[in-house]
Amino acid sequence: MNGLKTMFLLTALTVLFLVIGLLLGGRQGMVIAFGLAVVINFISYWFSDKIVLKIYRAREIGEADNPRLYRIVSHQSQMANLPMPRVYIIPSGSPNAFATGRNPSHAAVAATEGILSILTDDELEGVIGHELAHVKNRDILTQTIAATVAGAISMLASMARWGAIFGGVGNRDERGGGNGIAVLVMAIVAPIAAMFIQMAISRSREYAADAEGARISGKPLSLANALRKLHEGSRRRPLAANPSTAHLFIVSPLSGHGLTNLFSTHPPVEERIDRLEKMAYSK
Image (cartoon, rainbow, N blue to C red):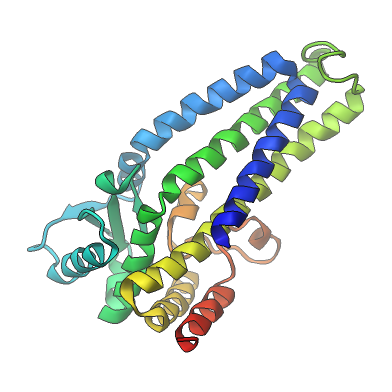
């Protein structure tokens, strides 16, 4: 179900790009914007793991450095039938973790010092299972595709806004005859719609990783307990995170409340816990 939802959302994002591209930038503007977005996100896809690990000052470890974490990652990798990823520790007391890497052969799992101090072994196994599920499901690729299309839409919208200021982008026929006000409104609304679709894709992948991670670890209740602890711990001690990387973490590292939750890359923790508990008790 989550896979179908993701495909539907990616299709909706692509259709939105095609429609907005033709309306705002014409065929030429659409091709230019898409090309720029592909280049930017191609670079991000190949080098994002190194960039994000450097951002959070993550330190690569071996088995001798932290036998507990290394052993759990190794065991869960075997359970997931994945190559052993590189293992990192982030020097932060905020409890969280993430996985990155362009494919299973070039993956990395990073955990904060905070998460290691508050979770039991069973709970940590559930968390690592969740992160390896992202690797197994190639969610980095999915997110890159979504970011490429959403980025192209934002570029087209920016072109249209500047065009409205300086006399128009392309010609009226190419844009389908839309008037200036309609184009300007679309230039404002389109990137917001694209952002919501991109975030919906991210939330869908989190649900899928929870389910697959519970199967990998065989401990859905332990993962549910971990999410509960991480949610509370992260709220008490938020991570100084870059919003552009927030979607990577198992729980949102940002301390958003109220309307800012509408822009969350993560589904409600209560709903995630409820699904995991139903999964455990339905056996």
